[in-house]
Image (cartoon, rainbow, N blue to C red; front, top):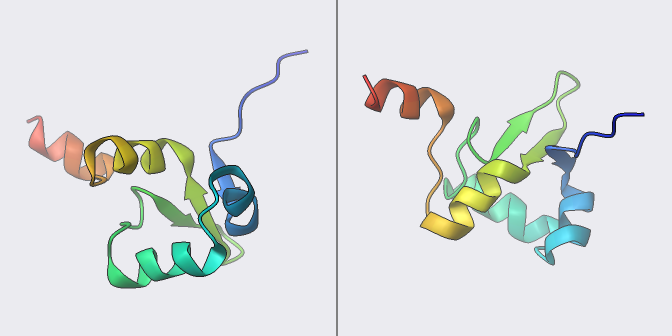
Amino acid sequence: MNLRPVRFVTLKHFETLTGYTVDAANSKIKRGDWLEGAVFMKAPDGRILIDLEGYEEWVIHGKAVSGQLLRAASR
């Protein structure tokens, strides 16, 4: 059986993993600290999902850059 780590998690699961409350995460999204497509995404059903890879980039570098921006910058 191949088990793959989960990349996108709900806000509640993110809170459990990191200690950032749902309210704190929502505040970072509303302030624009976390960019859609970089640190969070909206699922097809409208729920907010946190991209753990994007979150790690934000922690390490203090900012998150969307994949689209990275690709454009590398051209």
